Amino acid sequence: MNEEKKPVLSGAEGLIPELRFPEFENEGEWKEKVFEEVFDRITTKNSENNQNVLTISAQLGLVSQLEYFNKKVSAKDVTGYYLLHKGDFAYNKSYSNGFPMGAIKPLKYYEMGVVSTLYICFRAKGVYISDFFEQYFDAGLLNSEISSIAQEGGI
Image: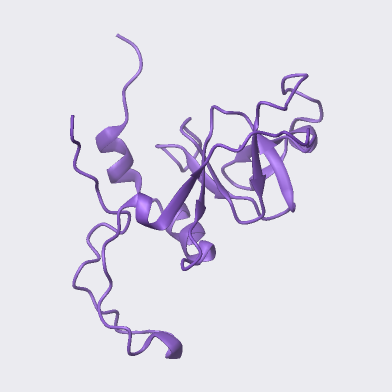
């Protein structure tokens, strides 16, 4: 089945912002891009046995699971977890207060950490600024795209 790929920056095509930073004044219109053009999926396993297990807090971002829960709640062996580096993103599709379609957060507070393979992890490609996408995701601008493809649980 050949599914149509939806743009990450939906509705931005043909838009020239009224206010721009000086270095972008002559860049022309915004262009829509599909997810795969902007991000690379991360599936790198924790072969170095990094023990900084992270969890997503909707309010705090990617934080140490040990500090957040005051106990270790991960598997004993975390070598199968995904290894993230500072600036990488993780998506937890579970509902969080203020994030009805789940939260997408960047790794900001640590150089590296690991997350469960239940998270969807990705990194902005070299020409894209991950700080912009942190604000984009926190504003909920992807919620309509996610809700159109999300599967409902229960029967």
